[in-house]
Image (tube, one colour):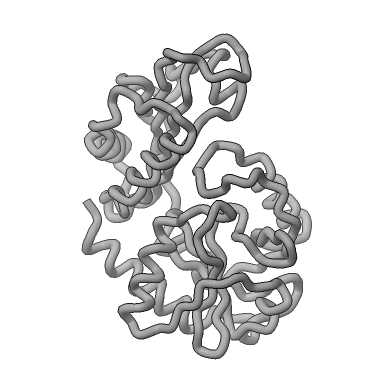
Length: 283
């Protein structure tokens, strides 16, 4: 597939899009990103993603690209040009091009890159069978609330999971689960949905916020607090949320099966609600 991508004001075939070797995203991982899901050809949770993007830029004192106010139109154009019905739009902003230096350049023009990816969401195999996970030490930098492209350690943790023959990893710091490699983590115990509270330690998930709101509206009890792997292993069920996975059940944690090794009812119901509400609100 030769997709149409977007680079600094131009729609280009993917094999013609080029970024300078002096771009700070390439040299310093000095960049932020967002992924907006696409369902039925429509964008999901767009305003939430852009609000978080603005926050990430502000936290890093990074300028907005000149096309920032046109991001909705660009997203829609890429979805249409690539005829994407289900998948996502990846957006990345770097600080721009400058000679390599640890000090931020004063007047670099930000680089804006966007492209689409097609993937199954509704019929995701993991949503039906559930995910098996392992735990590993959380060795990421401390500002995980900023959605940067510093993704090497999450990639390493995913490879650890793959080598162990499972689907993903939950990261652990000071004895408590922070989050998954690319998702927020939850357990269900005693009728309560338990997930870590927001801080610099985890990404402030857009899907997380919506799912917790839907859970409260459905009269489910939510408790935001730390939990351990041992507590997760004795939970009634568990699940993860992310823009690309929606709500996906977890059926095994470090070899311990949850709920008899089958997806639980809370995760299943929340996934149904999230998909239903997303289809109503897509733009």
